[in-house]
Image (cartoon, rainbow, N blue to C red):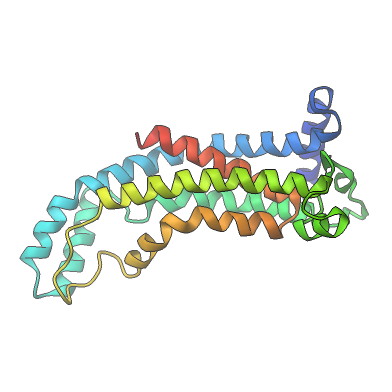
Length: 239
């Protein structure tokens, strides 16, 4: 983790002439964008996979009709079709999974009072009036929702709410457009559990509000930046 801390400190030093006291916060935003840029090829591949999966729906509908009385054979046929066309039903999950380590590193870095036996100097950095190591509860205790730190969180909540609403509408529209033909009773799902995931997906962006509220501000910045990047990226890749 000390190597990661050094990276954030170096980025903050480079950005200090532009962002002054908020240089570390700007470094976190820049770091997040670099991570998303590295993952972008996988996001492009996931977008191609989602489009290919949508193109398979007419053939899957035929399989449902053909194997309407044999759920096991239907599921096997659908999985074979995905394998034949090299389409993964869960292809869109990989970019998010690969970002998880960076988020947890950021979380632990700004939750630790010491690094390598020395005091964690990053905890002294702020985004305007909000310390990067504090949480929303700390901001409320310090000055309330309209205090200096509280206003920083209100701005983040507002940004997340706007992005979440955009993502919610886009995901609902894409889910409706790509929805498979309803299966006959007892024919089962393409992949066990995929139906429940599909129903929950449009609401996932709103869960970001909870994350921003409970993690250190530095980790919240990572989440907000990544969520905003995802919204722009999906608008471009799925247009």
